[in-house]
Image 1 (spheres, rainbow, N blue to C red):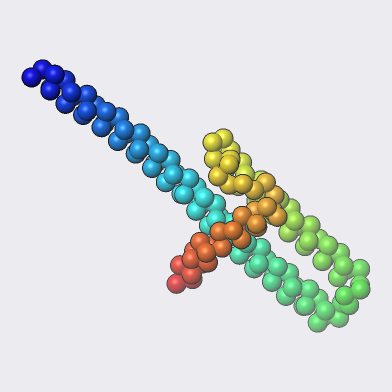
Image 2 (tube, rainbow, N blue to C red):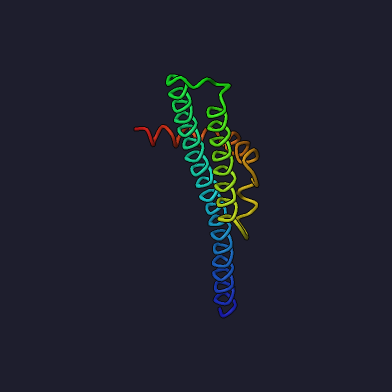
Length: 138
């Protein structure tokens, strides 16, 4: 009789142990999914900001042309170069911030280090980005 009780306790303990290990594994994959999803959402927002900023720059350059400044004029070229520098710095700083936010154990989850690799990551997760945009627009 004691053996049955001991066997029952052993089985119960093994069940708890394996249940705990399985729940930790499930929680780990859930964490990875949440971090990856937040990366896709953050990059989607960043890409939309870049898109809107580019459009605003085009409107500004168009206004310069309408005011009589030619595209080969020095003022026009300086403004265009300045905006490109600002845009590139914004991209670099934003990606550095996101990479630093994923330091440590989450570094492998967000496999990008610069703007190009971040946009490749976003392209691989395009469906999620589109889903986010549709939800944000409604």
